[in-house]
Image (cartoon, rainbow over all chains, first blue to last red; front, side, top):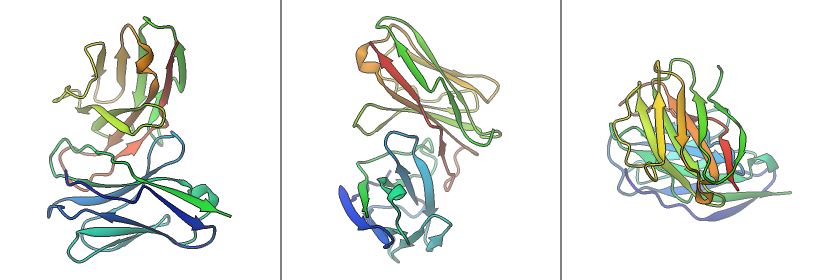
Length: 111
Length: 116
């Protein structure tokens, strides 16, 4: 699987947009970009994923650069409950289909 | 069920005892995964199942760990002769299909194991 690089921590003011970056410069053409988050030591929660195009769902938006070497997860109106560790993961096709978690970004949403 | 279900949610056991952790995946999901996470650490992949078979068991930490899956559904992770370093949250996950990219994996809430 391609490696990802994320800042270890970020702060965001409550109500503002949280923009979490991820670099995946060695991503392959058939690898998807996935985002999960983990609150305390609960099970990781799926947020969103994409291949080439930008994606949006009820939780977040995912912006993938045209060369696919980086992406940004956007939480449009962060709340205190969004405080968590956010993981950006890319997955190799047919490689056990598992997720390999890196260090992630610890997002702290502050009042 | 609606999500991945794990039991027990919490387990305290004495060193040297055996424990079984159960995972009930989302109905119809053919792929099942086990991870563990020690306190303050990252997620460590243990094993996955394609249907009832586990092609790669190399992620299991030692031969005290074993896992099985029957009927393509429920899976059990067994830890024999537990040690204090086995204390962690054990997370199970499932996904709908095997070997297809873009295949979302969903996690349960985990089983917290404390070995005293």
